[in-house]
Length: 249
Length: 166
Ligand SMILES: [Fe+2]
Image (cartoon, rainbow over all chains, first blue to last red; front, side, top):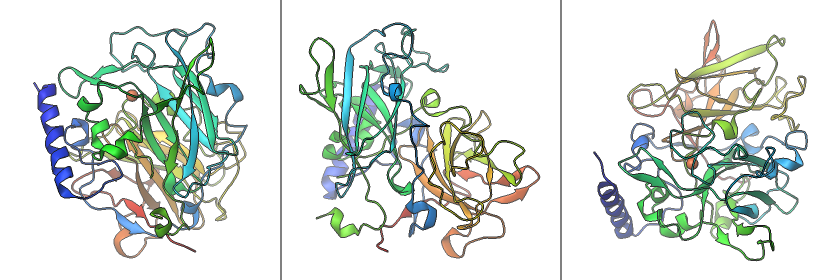
């Protein structure tokens, strides 16, 4: 049986190779063997470079018809209060030139405070919370800002290897102004002791790049007698029509 | 610096799927077509926990900028949808054939896939030249079929969109 020590050794070897390479990788690797499920699910050929055209330079539009104002509060979806630490998570969605992504859809989903998902295949023997579903949506405002009220999710075990645990995270799904900016990622919480052990987090081999997935605790977001607050800003790739040079300016 | 992606994971269904997600038009709509296919891994096994997103022009070639993809009103064609794969790795959309460009833009997510992948499914009869020539759906009694192979024999051509200036 593969142990955490085996996985940690693989992570360390890749990390050393990356450090020795002298290159900078800003994204996530598709081919990251310590995450066992990626072995047969990553392409082996390089993607073909194309100029985005027509439809790819636009995104679908979402509006008030799609998302109700209460859908951003994951603590009021059932008749009672969910268990756990009530938190607020807020931030801005911009493109890599700093332009806000306005009136665009943000979707989140997560485990409950005990680390259990409302999903029939989640077998983690932690209790379901009848008052917590764990999915929310909102539209960004004119400044590109989003805000969710939720419960801090717990870490949870998974079967990548023996005694594998995911650091606590919230899944985020984002749209930009172009189809090509589509992003699905995960937001983590500061100081999680499981970061070093987790092959999904570590699949972003550059330490600074993966830190961009970690929210910061923000006392200005925290509300007295109500909830603690986290801030997490999201930067989508540049929209088509933005010259590459500007991204590095 | 851009925010890196992460896998959609195994438990996205309750977060991302919704009623009507893959039905861009109601069944029975004149001109309705089915775009479907299987998502396969490097062993040729079906991927039952993938999610395909579709974005396309309408039947007149217009880029639609209408809300309502998440709560369809039954008559507005929004051009966007999503379809999770079933136990056999099959995804399926009910939609209209786009006029121009003559392809469905697709974005793929899956457990085990660490970042989204882009591709295009061209309509039969509109095979592109060059490196994208394999990206053509085949006409079949059930609709337009477009399988997505993540790895190995018949690996689908995935796209990296250049950033260009008009
Ligand atoms: Fe998760």
